[in-house]
Amino acid sequence: MQRLPEIVRRNRRVIMSITAIVILPSAVLCFLAFRAVRTENVQQQFQQRQRQRQIALVLEAELKKWLFSGGQDGAISQALLRFHISGEQIVFPSLAISIPPGKDVRPVPFSSPDSPVQDQRTIEEIYYPRIQAFLRDLKSSRNSGAQYFRRLKAMVVQIPATNEGYVLSSTNLTHYSQRKLDELTAPETFRATFLLDESRDAGLASAEAISLDDFTFFQIGFGSKEAGRFDVRKNFLLYAIVLLTLITISAVVFVYRGMAQEMAMTQLRADFVSAVSHEFRTPLSSMLALLERLELGRVVEPGMQQRYYQALRQEAHRLGLLVEKLLDFAQLEEDKKKFSFERLQLSRIIDEAVKVFKESAFHQRIEQACVGMDTAINVVADRTAIVQCVQNLIENALKYSPPDVKVLARYGMKNGTPFIEVIDQGIGIPVGDREKIFEKFYRAENARASNVQGTGIGLTLVKRIMEIHGGSVGVTSTPGQGSCFSLMFSNTKDALE
Ligand code: ADP
Image (cartoon, rainbow, N blue to C red; front, side, top):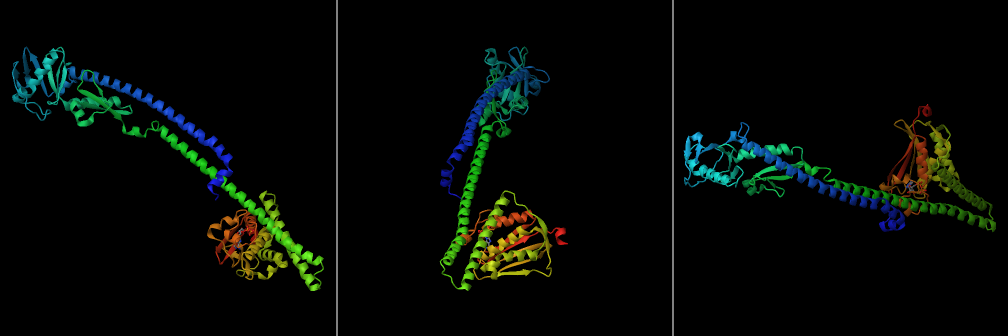
């Protein structure tokens, strides 16, 4: 993998295009999304506040109807205590008492306003003074016919146009109001809480609270519903930014990988060109040297001359093989290579591949064998192509092994599949390179380090040819100990009969 500054330097134009095509539009989109969402949020907040005010007005109207109607459905039916005003006296019918005006009684603490008021003393000490104060305020228009008493935890109400009045506990009042609020806010994205004076003290008041006009001792607190937090619209900006960031990162990673791969490929191609030049140069130089000596008449002895001609022949043969390999590679790359399939014996294929090395010094090192008893195993294949595959494997086995160590080419059947194996005791292939050596131009680190010449196309050829034959090529290897390349053929019935 190339280093980052190198990649940036070489791909400046592409990076600028990516910035123009992906990064800038993403940033603009983020900005626009941010603005759109902010405007929409302001509008939404405004509309929400309007709806909250309407709800407060509706609740106030409902409360008035309920508190002052005096009918069966009215709050009076839930009264703790009823009273009526007769002349200057306040009469409590349930206790059959009436209290004349001006009685000076001191209130005493009262713990549970919800328990029914039963005794005269409670009336005299707790309720009566407040009802009197309430009536006084009513006369001077300082209350609107209903007043909440904190210490009483109850409300005193006078039904208009009658002398009837009653006391309502805060629990009943809160219960009714909250039920109404829940009904009113059911379709909304916010919730409303009914707050009395004492609940505000308990810290329940919210910054968004709205007071009722005629009942200033009540408030409605507003807050968002739990589900609102996951509202897609509300979090749109966040989602948009996350999405755009992901798109940008993926684009950058994608392009970076593409550029790095492209550069690696360019490097491989450059290596390939120099490797091919090398492969040509070596036999050419030795041929030139041999020819020079012959021309100068320095080799006079006939036996020696014969050896020189043989060496020239070997080098020319080597060049011929290389040219053939390159041409085959080019044809396969362009899908132009023609195949003609025929029935072939595996043993013959190996014979022909080994024969190619007859002219070379390597010939002595090649051993042949058959695994098992079945000597006549047939496959359907293109003769030249398959022979070239085996020949490539043998050439590699020879190249990547010590000079005097033998290599073995053998064939047989494994689980009903015909195979050819080429085994050596050479440098082996590192685990990380075993897949890559079949890619074009790829050469393993240890092969390059040991200065063995090669082009990196031999195994690519083998793999493509085997795929075209419906078979495959595989390798097992132990670095430093050797490798075994196997060609597995498709066992078509036709080939095996
Ligand atoms: P090359 O011309 O480099 O040999 P190939 O495509 O035939 O190209 O092989 C690709 C690479 O696979 C080689 O460069 C080498 O690293 C590795 N390789 C192939 N055969 C052998 C082998 N028998 N032993 C060790 N390494 C091998």
